[in-house]
Length: 268
Image 1 (cartoon, rainbow, N blue to C red):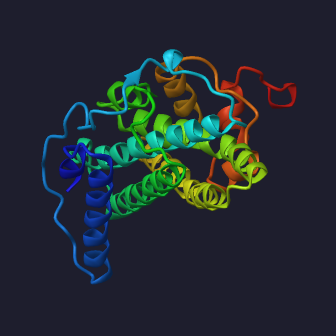
Image 2 (cartoon, one colour):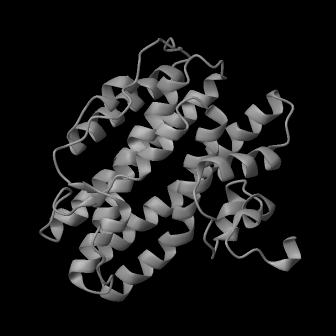
């Protein structure tokens, strides 16, 4: 099921398969049945549609978020992030299937992949109602680098994708919501609020399973997290941080502040 999603190129079709397979998994689990964990080789890079054109992050055009074009660009960027997240969550299932994990690990990441597919559809609906569509603008290819860099390191994947990249979403989404509130675009506001509420659980899944893996290895989660972020994530983490939502997701300040570009004295 995971490789089927990863091998599907068109965005809406990828999201539909993600939701269908997640529903199949959930129905089996609710019935007390276990879907056997098989073996399948995930692709090094997931199938993607011909558009959007993928650029280096520094080459993606900057637009003022307060303008209509800027708001479309913002929604397009979120849609791109959500489609990447669909692939990232199915990839962690397939790529690390040789690592023994409790069934709850798969419950969580299947649920997260289902959420991300829903989020992608929400963003596509918003774009289409603004007479645009996913693929209409260029996007950056930087997100999948996290998957490539951590392809052989489950600890690293958990640290970088949910605990750094998705945690960053908790920091920036309230500001995006405010932009659309000011513009009176209620559909985008409600969609972003849905994403904001549900992304907390994805960061929490990362923190939970990262701590589980560290406990199994008898290692200190905070020390391991710091080492892995310095290894795989270039540059310091950027404040301001949404400390309330990060704490709700199980990320205490002493995990991320020591990695920040500006490290407050009281945490030294």
